[in-house]
Length: 328
Image 1 (spheres, rainbow, N blue to C red):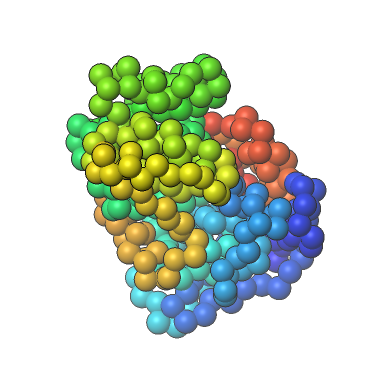
Image 2 (cartoon, rainbow, N blue to C red; image 1 turned 90 degrees about the vertical axis):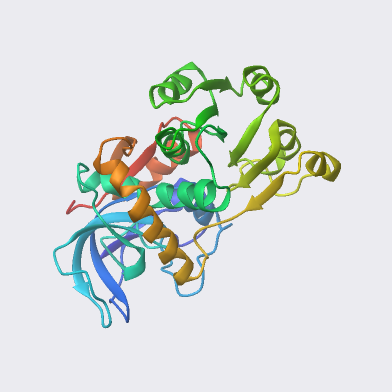
């Protein structure tokens, strides 16, 4: 098969479409003929040499895909050759074939075409696990989403609105904020021109956000704590603004607030399977009913993964950027 390889870390040009050995479905795994994969920030970090795949994972980038089951390994039940599926991966999505634990497999939701389904596994698993399973967003609460026009952001807006929460977003510029509003965002903050702490305070009569979903990290840490409501929960899922910040513990204590920080890729298989099962139970019906949908910015040939990375790094996209295999 062919896959995107990274012979040496570097810029987008470091991504090379090359012939590599075919994967094999092992115990408890299925083999997928990939139609599409999706591009994530973690893929960019891996290309740059900053995010080594976990032990046993494919060395090729790609944390989600959609395609057809082409082989079923020993011990797998409930899946058959030919099934249309999408999957959460620890790596290997930028390829024509990938082996994946059966617990990380999902059927393509009703109403979604196979190619677009690749836009779903990583964002639904990330948002559902952090906002709902850990932070316990409830109807009527306020969720602040940083990067509201990103793949994570567009999914977070839709899921929060689906359960009756209010949503504030930060995004860069009027066009991105307009798209967030179309998805249901109630409070729109241009982080380039506005202070999100002050804007949120004005919009909530000083209450702040019950939950903040943060992709920035250190750069926003102090301001995020200031923006939290009493009993608020800050969920950190990204480090685009650095890894080390100063935390005012007194402010955190006064608000009786909590901070969690999680990643998905390196979790044990049993934890990933539990998250995927929860997504199938709670999110897939919302997609089937048309309440939630994948947001796809563009689809590029997988051999042009370098261009897809340039798009992601420029933040010129809204939603997900997909890669299609030659057979897709």
